Length: 221
Image 1 (tube, rainbow, N blue to C red):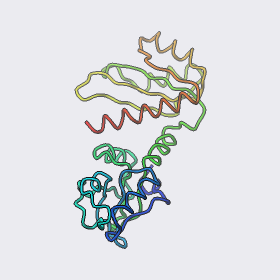
Image 2 (image 1 turned 90 degrees about the vertical axis):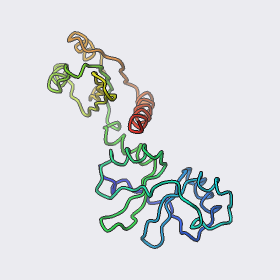
Image 3 (image 1 turned 60 degrees about the horizontal axis):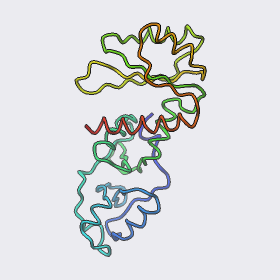
Image 4 (image 1 turned 45 degrees about the vertical axis):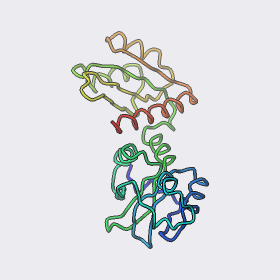
């Protein structure tokens, strides 16, 4: 999943001649805290609501505002993980996207990131979630796959996280069945620690929201 595939077609950009009040109005309408400043196809920077409130001059053109962010952006061919990392690093609600010639192409919104993570992680496919806690030295993708497949199921996505300097891994599996009991019993028989399992759709939505928030927090460390 690349940045070019996630660009929003509804969020407007600002011109340097637009007033701070216009910027705040657009932010409120689209429920974001940042908007890009673009003159023709030149991306000048990202203004935040905090920048505007700090100056406290709503009728002033935003071109007169000092920007707190160091012109963040990704190029069209960057992976979704790069988009998430940049958003987490600067706590962005939108991520500007430029083409290979440094021309502005649009922004990726927080909601676009969430929906694309869901698609990228196969959340829209039926199935259940299993989370394992394993020591790094004991990790084996082939063994985990064999355990799942021995129960007439298959892994449709896998995500691995580890805290800095940790000796253990958290392995999140999405499998193509909601009948997880036999898979969980097999993991436990092979001394895997199963910390979480989820099967209902509403629980999956909450689960992925929690996973995204944890990932953003981790990337911001």
